[in-house]
Length: 572
Image (cartoon, rainbow, N blue to C red; front, side, top):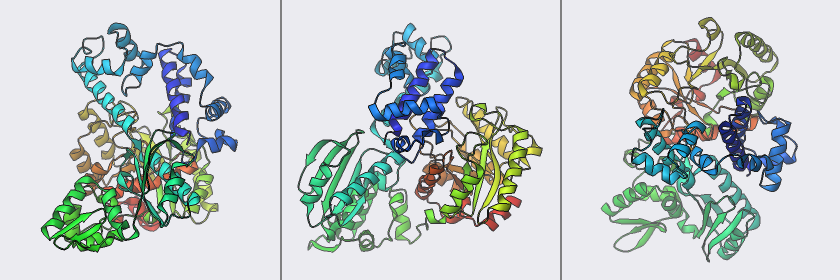
C-alpha cells in the first residue's frame, strides 16, 4: 500500500513549510491530508485509479494531483524543489517528535548539530538546556522523541502488519493450491499495537510448492532464505516475512510456540516440566517415554497442561496462566458484540461524508446506533462547529432519524477541553446533545498536574459521557502526555464518565495496560473509530483488539449495550 509513502511526503512538506515560515493554513492542509491518508483502510493507489482521491477529507485537486504523481513515480517534484531550500540536517532534526522548526534551526545554528546521533549525545551531556528558551525538560523530551524514532524504525503499526499479512496470506492461497491451513503467528496474532516482523504458519503436503510460490510473490524485494520448509523475505516496504510449513499433527503446537509471547511460553514449559511433560513446537510429550500426547490443535496443548484455551491476545504472562488453571479467564468481548460507534466525524466539521451516508453505512454493518461527534468551535483547523451550526445539525439528525429506519443516529460533539478544564460550548448547548465526547487537543506539553486537572474538571461538569483519546498520543509522532490515572479513574467512576479506546490506527488510546487498569477501577470503556471516511468504520476491530488485550468483557464496554439499554444509560 502507498498510503504511508504519501503521508510521509505530505508530513515532510509541512515540516519544510514550517521552517520557511509559510502560510499556516497550507501547513495544516498538508498535515491533515497526511493524517487522513495514513488512516485509510483502502489503498490510496486504488482510490487514485478510481478517481476518488477527493473523497479523502482535506484532499482537493492540487493534493490529489500530487498523490497521483507519488503513486505513479514514487517521487514528488514539489517536495524535491522545497528540500533544496532548507539544510538537510534541520529536516533530520525535525524528524524527532517534539522538535519544531524553530528548535531545529536553533540546534543547527548554535550547536552545529547535524544528525540525530549528535543530538542524542548533546542531550545526554546536558548541552542543550543552556540555549534560549530550552530547559532540562526539553532535553528529556528530545531523548524520549529519539527513543520513539528508534522504535518506529524497528516496528510497524498493527494496522500495517494486518494489511501486509492479509496480502501475503491471500496471495499464497491464490498462488499455491497446496496450502491447506494457514495462520499468522507472533506478536501480530497477539494483536500488539506494534509489530516487528511477520510469521506465517502453513500446513501442506507439498511444502516445496508453497516455498516456491512465497518467494515469488509480487511484494517480495529480497529473498533472505529459501528452504524446503522455511523461507524468509524482505518486502518492498522493508518488512521481514517468514513462512514455515509444519506437519498437520503439529500445527496447534507450532501456533502456540510461534505466537508467544516468550514469557508465556517459558511459563507453560515450566508447568509442563513440573508434571513430567515437555512442550515444544512439535507437540506435548511425556518426558520419560517421549510419547506425543497433543499437537494438532491449540486447545489440545493447553488441555494437556490442565489449562483452558488462552486467547492469543492474553498470552503476555500477565496472570493469564493462573486464571486458565482456575477456569477464571474472562469471556473476552468479540467484534460481533459491537452495536455502534461512538466517535465519527461528518461534513459538519472535518469528515468526508454526510450524516445520512454515515448512518446508511453503519446500518449495513449491522449497527443499532451511531454517535456523530463533530468538532467544537475552538478547533478551527478541523472546521469546528459554531453554536448556530449545532442547532442546524440537530435538526438534520432529527429529520434523518424520522426517515431512516433500522438505526438510531445519536447527536454528539467532540468538545475541546480548554486550558482551565472548562468545555468549549455553553451548558445550554451541551445539554442539547444525546452524548458529549470531550478531548484535549492543545497544551500537550503541560505538566502532569495541569493535564490531570483539565481532564478531571471536564468530567466533574457532569456533562461529559466519554473522554476521547485520553493520553493524546499519535504513535511514532507524538508521545502520550502524562496523567495521574488513579485520580482520573476515580473521578470517572464517580461521574459515570466512560474512557475511550480510540481505534484510529496511530492512536489506540487508551492502550491495553491503561484500559485494563481502568476496567479494574470500575470504569466503563467506549470504543470509537474517530472516523473521517466511511472505510475507517472498519478500524473498530483495532479498538476491539485493545479491549481484548485489556481482558475486557461485554459488560465493560459501552458499545456492547443494546440501543434501549444505551438510551437508559444516557438518561441516567
